[in-house]
Image 1 (cartoon, rainbow, N blue to C red):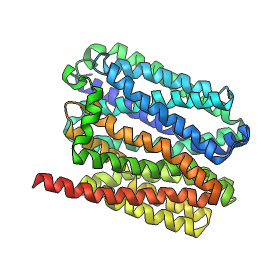
Image 2: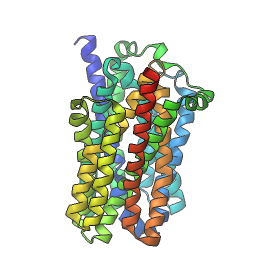
Image 3: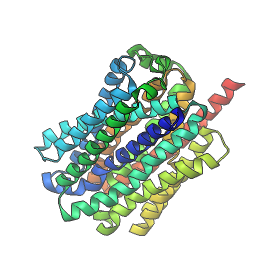
Image 4: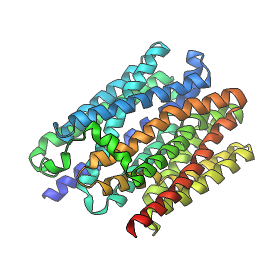
Length: 395
């Protein structure tokens, strides 16, 4: 087996890792109704689970700025992945709700670090076509998102929501054994694939400097509002179908439809469309806004499931395209180019679930879900401005 083959196996492990991570991220949205019933809380309080998860995401910035450049990314990835699995396992003991919130902060902390490092490493390992490689990587995340809700909903029907978290953590522990064994076995060959130049440290001053460029700011805002769309659907779509439409059987399938469309969008649609990334983002999110509005007006489980699929197909390409632009604009600092857009996504996941949950508590859950459509529309508008900005810079 030559060096290229060793590298391909390692990249395949990264793709499998993203598949498992994508599946695990659907646990909140899939189990949210059971968690609400277990703790006797309202939607706004349940939305805090995502908010605390996102608060942990922000602290991932400290891990990245402190350790990237000091510890090799492959080693750091294995360590953080282990703590991510431990955090999932802690939730499975169903501690008091205040402690559960702290556990979700840890899940967010280590999960965001894993996500950022994996994206950065793939940009390092496959620099010739960052756009396509990111679409493929996030396509596997989407496939995990598609399988996760159905798998976890079936398990929760036979067991309970706490045991679902335990099973998910066990999958990660098994994967960690495989990952560590391969890296240890092939370290001499893999260690040279990511040069020291690709592991340059990121300082806190760099975080501030990111916003000095207009295109960076617009990229950040596009990710923020897309995160508002995605987080609203991921957290509340299943509950909307189960409680408002009174179709519990369709809940998991509606959520999976989002991720099925997202996976297809990233793996097939985005690479096939010959257009600039901002144009793809604009058109895709505009279609999503219209589709979600139509699905909510239809008032049926079939209608919202079709709208969820359309939303995934049209705007699922947004995150990998944004990350690819961030890495392309910072080729020697891919961790930086990945971390900054993800910061916007984390902030959206912090703010939008409790906001949309609060709206759902007071004026009805359809209006809470409609926040996702409004966020998609804002993403489309910002993408238009970003496209004009890039054309102006090129001119």
